[in-house]
Image (cartoon, rainbow, N blue to C red):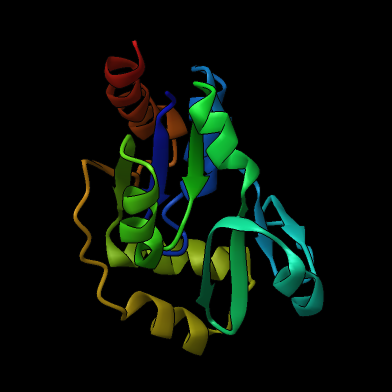
Length: 170
């Protein structure tokens, strides 16, 4: 039976960067999300129309900021066959994931607000008003592991996450 790792944190915390780091070091598979948004240079996801999204079978799905997000049902069969997965998700889907798969662990990224604002402005994807709205949300989450991801060197937080996961899957 495989392990499922959910990575949560505010926009700009480095979720995708750290997931890429971890998958380069461990036998853990990065899961691409299906999102009802046009492709962009900042995220690695599968762009789908709302109509196509509504016809698909998902293991997990959620809505955020007028977009729909989904995780393929194939992840569940992969978990059952012993593969390990890591996914960038909304904290709103944690309890559902844990109810569907017992070996689900939450990795929460924490970053000072001023660092998040700087990263979001550099990314240029959202307006200052959208950035403020995202960062003013309550980000309290019950995590199995929390790491500060404010250092621009991904290996600093990445190695801590690798150690946490390695202890579980070894």
